[in-house]
Image 1 (cartoon, rainbow, N blue to C red):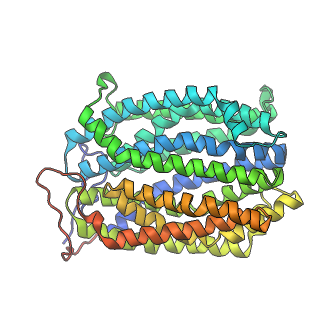
Image 2 (cartoon, rainbow, N blue to C red):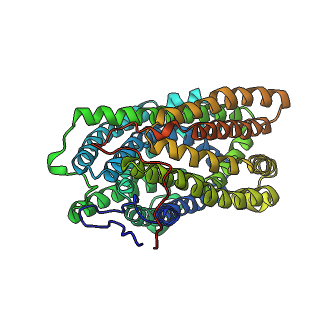
Image 3 (cartoon, rainbow, N blue to C red):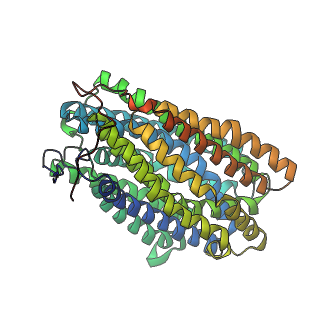
Length: 476
């Protein structure tokens, strides 16, 4: 028997409550994976220009400011997590009015928070960098870079919102198209503005921040205009924006734990960076190189974790718990296999990867050690994010927040302080990171196995959960 996938104009996305689960998982993930790959490739190109052409100091300045930017972005990611989960569940339950209220309310919330964070971040950039014990040699560069980049916050929040709404209805392709164009333009503008090519002023490190801010604003506006003209169901209605307070509180209920999770994870990263800064500019630059490579290695886990959440969200909304369990199994197989390849490469030939970004002997050795120590974490992350994806998709974002906080503040930060002092080397921090990732994975697996997530957190009309039934045979 063949089941048809709903791609009607009314829906504007993909109905993932019917059809082959592995096919949905792969087809939904591929555009997100491509987008993340392009984002990572841009990060590599940017790190090449900064690290190889401008030097170790500017690279360390970018590394020092990154946790602050990620902390601000964490709020956007958390709130849009609430949006995407609600949109996915309402789409699965075919409750279109509730879905539209979610999108309209989220638009107002994100616009306000994005503007607020831009003003606060710009005003206190100097104080933040000082509190992070940023080395004096890179302090002015780090502050200047942060102040420019932070001007993109409202645009970034807007892009997160629209992308999350589109993915909630099963459309992961449209955000990809605009992301690709924005990243390509940014990659072209980076060296032009950094080195003063084609008659432009030479901005140095600030050039890459200016390029990013410009393209993020242009990309956000272009995407909003495109969706409005297409009358996409996931597009905000700009003529009648409003806040539906019951929906607002529901978004906060689902999204606030994710906001807390992302924010506290970012704060934990700031603690870690502060410890690493104490070992000097070379250690900070080496950690920056390691994080760039981590972006590539963690990409499958991040992508499939998000895809699992959307598939589980739609199927939980439709009351199809048995399909949500299948999503977990397929997610582990596909994501775990890809992450295993990255782990083997990072452990066996880290020198080739590090050499792309830096040549300085002392920093080079630290970066190589980082990759060898962190390689096994790529496996831990794949399992962690798939398990968390199931729990988040069911709406229990508070649980995944607790998992992250235990791994970070009970394991990572205390161990980073202890091991770095005990060993007298920055590598102690890297061992702490790997151990904490293993702790988080174990807790997430235990939570999934317990099965509490099968009970719907959000009621959808008369939909009742259906589980442990034999799935219908599907031909795609």
